[in-house]
Length: 261
Image (cartoon, rainbow, N blue to C red; front, side, top):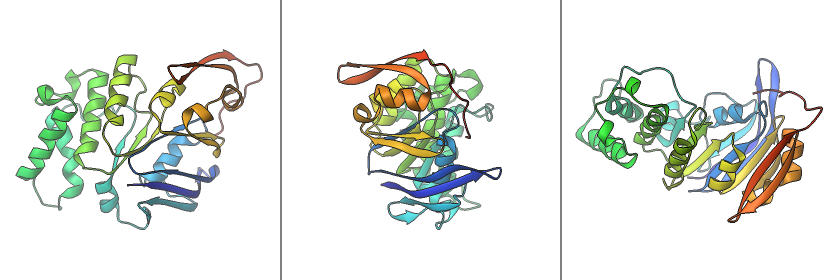
């Protein structure tokens, strides 16, 4: 399932935060949005999973405008994983993952045997089978984030949208989560904070600054020292290790604050 963002603009609180943004993520690819705080990454992702309506442009999933489809249809084909959530801790892992089947049920439908099998398969795939009866409150932050990923996967989505999913996770759990996501074989678009992570896992990177795309393409070609220095307002050096960029940073005088969300 391909994703195409075409000339998307959007506003928050009467202020325009996205300006004619365009990029594509081909079927089965992992696209990553990077940029400083205020560059518009979260707002852009919200236009993709129908949480923020664009003021201009279109978001197409397999050629269909997501804002012309029903919320139910969009919920069936697009899974969403946000930063760690802080509600629903009274539910068990299995109950939480099963919530992902809601988009496939009618108003008064109950889970079927097939739904139960999907939940069990997703728990196994994400390494949660042994935790199925444990409550979320008993799990670590990394384990909970895996549960929320499993809930999204229980929808059987063909597009996965991730907004800073590794925030607040230690390095091991960041790597575990991104390895799992990369191996899913579905189309993924994510906002990531760490440039090293983006370079290691993305098929393509889209760099946003002040709500505009300033560069896009393969990480090794896009994430140059000059571009990172300019966009993030730091002094940046880039070394290539095992074919991947590794970044070093120093503060730069005169940096300005972010300009949106």
